[in-house]
Image (cartoon, rainbow, N blue to C red; front, side):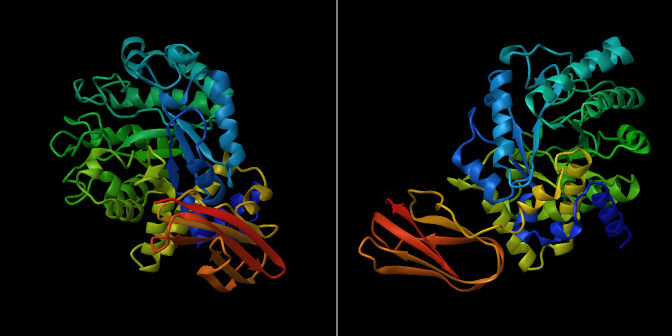
Length: 457
């Protein structure tokens, strides 16, 4: 109850009405818990729909999305334009070998964390490097940097940390110092940062991109020092949870799927109350060991606020819609509590308000109660055999939604009941129909609209 009261006070200070936030639907709140990516240098139709209708919470961009500074600025502006609720727009800009902005796309090469923390080991060098990169992100319209790495360089030959020079130092205190300077320079330019990879990836003998990663016999408590020190300084941005298995911390699950690690250790023992995000959920440490649905369920129940995916499609359709469907079903089945969703959603909105990503009530009302009746174009279209039809209602209304063939014969009655105000989706399966042009019509109060859909088998 105290946490809820404090959350309301914070939102009021940022000019955001708590009642508006409560008005958002369960599906809209779940949408804020997902980050996705896409291929290409322009937004495709799927991610446009995810941002507009599914309330996608964030987008992460990779090297393949970036051509030059002007192109990336226009792309990020497009993401903002299509977002129902203003999005986190993230990139990995650690410096050195993990830096999406570099000399190949109109920027400059940057120092690795190892060079800054071990070779130079100077505050002015680290601050200058971080400040330069923060300026690039600000210029391009990013609001999140998935950095710094605060893994301790326990094993210099660790395939994904030490070998790539992503760690500042083998000394935990040195890691803390350089990370704090790095964070400060990005925060000065209103760019969020993200500590990774909790509880510590620096000793790993395996790469979690490629499979199960066991740190049971190599990890030590000293790898928590950078986190503890940063939290004591008041760090409250994001923490990324690694797909790292440590039997001493949880004998059943890797950290990203472990309530004991993500909630009990990170939040309850270390006192972090900011936003947590998983490492990429498509990494083989997860996909080779868990089903897609189980991984989603376990990650949410572990206490992760955001699930990170590096795609926008699953089996040819919207990955985001699929995840929302799964989590909504798990909530209805009481396998995930509604309170778990509310906790994450509240933390996300609070962080967006703190950094000015959400700046007004209008930006949240856009994602809650529509101002008029709208029938959207079905997606995908053409389709085979299933598609989704979406519509919005400004008030509770009796709704009729029917599908007709080219001769005007009703082939499906999808909705014929009262619906609450808000955004609604209906799935239509045409597997029993022949290929051709069909029409769907929404009738709500005095509003009638018809659109065309095409089934191709």
